[in-house]
Length: 332
Ligand SMILES: NC(=O)c1ccc[n+]([C@@H]2O[C@H](COP(=O)([O-])OP(=O)(O)OC[C@H]3O[C@@H](n4cnc5c(N)ncnc54)[C@H](OP(=O)(O)O)[C@@H]3O)[C@@H](O)[C@H]2O)c1
Image 1 (cartoon, rainbow, N blue to C red):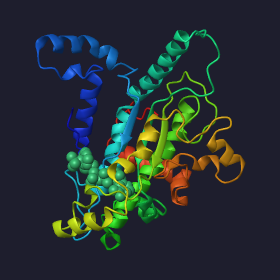
Image 2 (image 1 turned 90 degrees about the horizontal axis):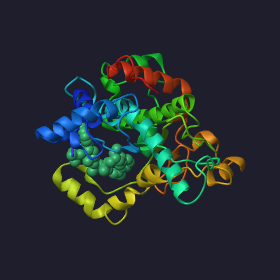
Image 3 (image 1 turned 135 degrees about the vertical axis):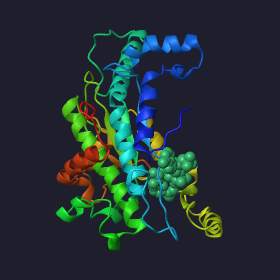
Image 4 (image 1 turned 90 degrees about the vertical axis):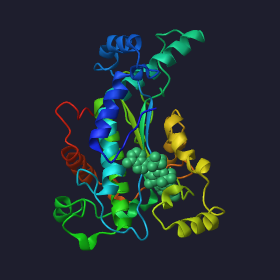
């Protein structure tokens, strides 16, 4: 287990360095000389261009300072707290771990080839239409609608964290903007991964392996009774839990879409004859809608602002600049 503070860019960097230098079982964190020497010997392999294999990254951590704490707060680096933790921390985390995710896809493909061989099939036989892929899962929220103004005007692009336009600030809006930023990131990541590898997660149909391509999905987990109300006064929080505990999803139920997106071979049901292909061909959903899942893990449409390629491209550039992405780290 390693500590990670997503609101601190230095913590994200330290976490990723430690992850990539550790062995598959976390041997790099061992304190004795023998394991340190073993980790040092393995480091060039694990931390090379292929990276330590990582099969799924679920960007679930989040803050929502609701209620009486409706002031604009910043983190240690002066970044607005919702944007810092919910989007920028995850953005940096995902990009620094991209070599490991690509290695994860290759590892999954290799395992699939071995499995087919053990079952008697020829290793050189044509691959099935779908191969397992590593993926980034962004846990967003239906409240991304509250952030629809993010990046829509030049004035907003000059001040995406509402620093100089404090009259516009509310924690609902700040949270919504961070959740929209997660969706724009997920969409742009899927598009970029498509360019870099074979197919992308954004509702791609049949796909082939080989490029170490990484899928990207986003979701709304549903309305879930969790500690998300921790910023409310204790009595209000307790009343909320008592009342809403009967109506809203339990934490287990709220994890359904995340687990599905992280583990299903094809979370949006694409592929020949799949649910997504059927939905697209019947006109009930376009393929571009099939990267965002609802609480029941069904593909659904986010708000139009989340589908704007131009805003997504701007957000990527702004995020890279804000987190101080170094040359060679924008690897998608
Ligand atoms: N609950 C809902 O109804 C709902 C609805 C829509 C979307 N969501 C989304 O679902 C996700 C999970 O939220 P939740 O409802 O489970 O809220 P939660 O109970 O408050 O859990 C938030 C989690 O994020 C972690 N976290 C917060 N700040 C962090 C930081 N700076 N660095 C690392 N980890 C940090 C917390 O870790 P610690 O416990 O260690 O602080 C905690 O594990 C969030 O992204 C949220 O926006 C929730």
